[in-house]
Length: 248
Length: 256
Ligand SMILES: Nc1ncnc2c1ncn2[C@@H]1O[C@H](COP(=O)(O)OP(=O)(O)OP(=O)(O)O)[C@@H](O)[C@H]1O
Ligand SMILES: [Mg+2]
Image 1: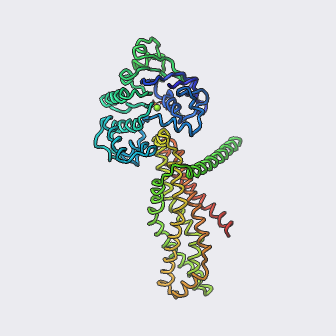
Image 2 (image 1 turned 45 degrees about the vertical axis):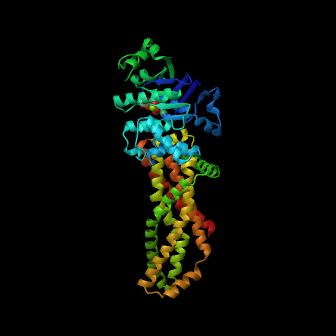
């Protein structure tokens, strides 16, 4: 449903994306892996229009979103949800107000209904009784969960995840992975996940793509990727310092 | 030498670009003000923040300034035997000049820096991006209400400053220095016109725009973590203060 074609982006002459080509299928979890600083966040920000490409296209159901008018794109955005790397909760609002924010802004639902939806979404990410807490008082794992609840509050068709497990302990990471699977399977939502967490990738991915030096160098199912002999991919998946990717 | 001019050129270019960006932000903020849906909750929240919570500092600075003016005015006017003019001197200085400028500077220090910090933090923690991804226009949601609050609340604060300044002047002039209260009040009413007050209020509305626009802009475009947020707050305060004083001169010469 999303087709990325020859996407290029440089910052101050530094090439970050150098012709990315990728297809994201409806109802699947697509995981894009790559090293820190390879431009994963930059790529996901293009998909949701936070950054404009230097060249290339991003087609959503066949329509190029990079050239849409602001008004048209605002309607497109309502089909998206996003979980940011640092959760990006509004820190002047309670958890309840955060999760219910888009509902209050975009719908005329009565407050009691919104409260019920918020409660239900929070329950789905394993949180109860935290509605009146402020984001500053939450642990990293709880923030990510609240961020996930907020991202799915409007039942979006597509949810983007920027490093959902970074900075969490392995157990919390695994429980986030479970939550993602639960929420995705329930509604057959399209998930696009960006991460360098290999365990998460193996657990949730329907499709894996590796971003390296501004391009997608390999893609396939988890099984295909595990069997792929590309030395760069092998080095990344096995987490070795020595190999074709030079650290220093 | 060449390097010097190159650097000068770059600085000038940056100043022009930034000015352009600030003006664009102003146009956007005004455009979204008239574009539905209208949400007044944020506006009232900002009005409370800019107005109500600046009240204390403004009353404090206003009353002491009025008191000092009366004392200095008395000292100077006594030399011409014109002590009876202390009242209008205080009132005119407050209404035309010090009321608006003092409130402007105090609100910059209090609310301007806080706005830049708040928006800057929202920028570097991706909260502004999050707003955008939730199909909320961040300028409409964050900047428009702040500018409206500034333009509406600064004149209110300036009136209050004027009023407590005149009260302070009365206290010093009449109670401490022994000017006849009837003369003090009578002279003030004789010499101060509604125009003087109106003119001061126009100034303060402009200052309100400057403070909120500049502070929002600096915060909105902050980058580089906590340090960047601090930088945004500092430049918001410095730039707002400078622009208040510079525009004060031009507004005064227009409305002279
Ligand atoms: N707005 C920007 N302006 C200038 N350079 C940028 C900008 N955004 C990203 N970059 C640069 O693009 C490169 C890729 O950044 P990006 O944040 O996408 O990395 P990443 O793959 O998400 O890494 P991480 O796993 O650490 O989050 C970095 O070198 C970064 O400095
Ligand atoms: Mg990133």
